[in-house]
Image (cartoon, rainbow, N blue to C red):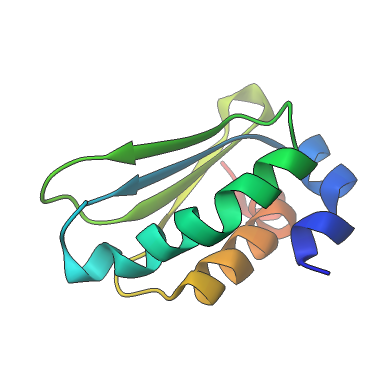
Length: 102
């Protein structure tokens, strides 16, 4: 099973919103495009009340934003990440960001 199927409760309790920013054409965003194509639907099915936003813009660097309660937010530059690296980063963000957030 994928991590999002095993850890639905833990993620939805900590994370309030996930945003992915990517470029439709750039090579640095190719992993993000692959991630969205292969993981968005199962992730959304397992977390139906969690907002998962995908924003495509020309010539932007790919970024993952994760928002927690009280407006705490962290970001991660996804330039040249693979789809599996993004999945791992998202998994780790739900645990580690609360400890390090401002």
